[in-house]
Length: 248
Image 1 (cartoon, rainbow, N blue to C red):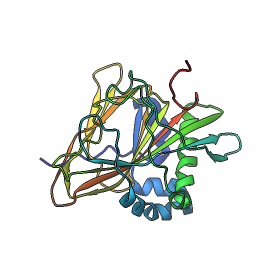
Image 2 (cartoon, one colour):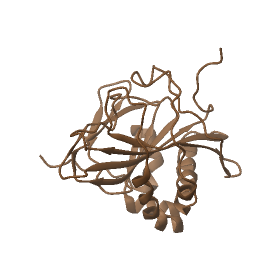
Image 3 (tube, rainbow, N blue to C red):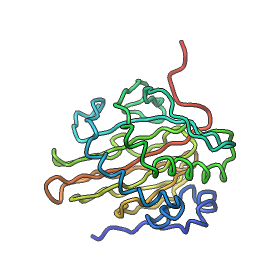
């Protein structure tokens, strides 16, 4: 069965699509246009996914996920992006039944990766897009570079299943898809039966989600050839600070 192509949104329609459907999918060419000159350096980010350390927090017994983590604050008035001191990633159990309720510490994103012009351009442009839909003073951004591999026969991009992240907006950017089958993306209305499914296959295709309105998941991947893997960059945008455990 052939993969279902994603419903590409014209960049000029991305605001309306988010408001109308709760999500939008930008083509790689569209994303590069939005980033301007910095878009030419997106490919320079890709080698950093070869150096992601293992995720040691997986509770399903697997060893298929590799990741790093970084946090930023984007001031929407000045446009300044501040990298905040390295901190744990935390989600409530209500949003992540498998890994919620614990502070998970991951290795930080490498400074050389953060120095690539496309990195800050992504944070800035996505921040502007989401602010046009929901005006706020600042965004608290968490960045998660992921690699899901198939060395054990199967890899699970979303082991927690269909979920929300407990933020305002999520961007899922496909960085690479090599030697795998499966990995179908599914987006559903949080309060109804409406949904869509499709496969992200072109590097730097970007899926933008209104996390308050939709839930999402990606089905497991299997190897189509040795060394098969799927790389993504997940960026979450939250106005009300970073998520963390309630003070005792």
